[in-house]
Image 1: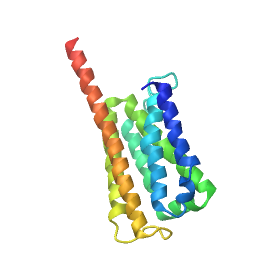
Image 2: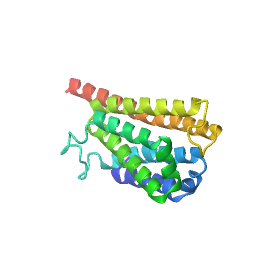
Image 3: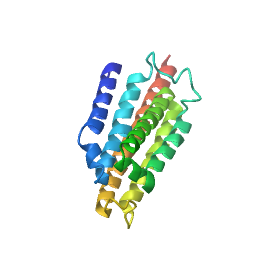
Image 4: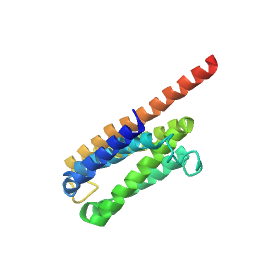
Length: 194
């Protein structure tokens, strides 16, 4: 996949998440928020990162401390869990500025994790595994909770949203980690043959 194609596809998924019916749906349906969230961090962000990594605008080589995969994964964890706290979640669902801030932070955090991981494959495997674990845990918490965590969403809606996060988030980051592991193994094999 070429960089330009990857960037274009990433922007297409952002357009789908932000310019379609999802922002309006997310006001009343938790699953709408979760579809939008997963499109941003688990679909668009890795595509955008693939379009950036190795190119002339790739910041990972020049700023390795800012783009270390494990700190990026921890930063992303803090951002995602904070925006799923009931008061911040309500702020994002019912105000334009809240939605803009939430989605912007999700995008930046997602690109940060993916770009950091693609730029440093060995540590990237760990960063993506950590992210997969916390996405899976938060998805399980939302989908298995016996009471609604958000007063403006019912329990079934919350459960559906949790399952979406559990499946899409868990699979996306786990797949990314496995893909990086395969790339590392291939590089090691080529080094041994040389």
